[in-house]
Image (cartoon, rainbow, N blue to C red):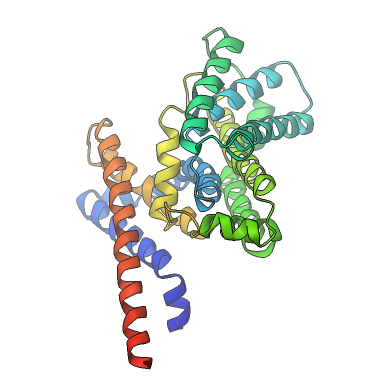
Length: 325
């Protein structure tokens, strides 16, 4: 049990933070504990979580993706247009996923093959993808997506339980298996830990990085389809600042911003905590603009906790080595 706790101590910390957050806002306003509000928190965490899971994979390689918000808008606009054009639903879903995967591959190619810094490359594609969104829509939202298309990702399968939550959890499970049980996942961690050593060990760094960015964008694509289903529209202005939310979910969940460490389950918890904080502020009547301040503070605290934990881990390791000597 002690070994298990040591391995997942950051996730336990996030879980405790969720409990404290619910207790605090529940005491401040009893409506926070209502079934409707809890359902809203879980539903809102889907977007943060889906994007955060992809961001987690990217950050583990030692990279970052600032284009996810713009990619979400682009996929949402294209998906809405295809839905209104009557593209069969199975083809609609597959094409949307392929578009998102392709956008991720472009990021991966720029970073791994052209050796651009992830920050610079994805900042460039962030502007490109947003611009394409405005071009293909003429700057206007794509309205009135047919109900049968919306139901694929937004209908309730039970009272206060949307199918989007199930999609979120399934994607989390799939990505956990990919990251923990496949060669690709092992190579992602190896690159994040030490890219030069991974290359010398035979890891195909270019291929792995490119595939990681493509795979990661699938989470953003699913988030885009969920938003289209929920809102019934594809808006070229949507998704602004969502990259910060995705990074926050990953950071809160224990993903090391230096790369090499992180897991999907932690990001799921991070997304729920992040959503709970935002919902709590709204419940207390705090101005929406203050959410940006909270987001920044949360990211800073999460990053600092990583430094503190690493310090104590190293200190304990040094103590044990000294005792053995």
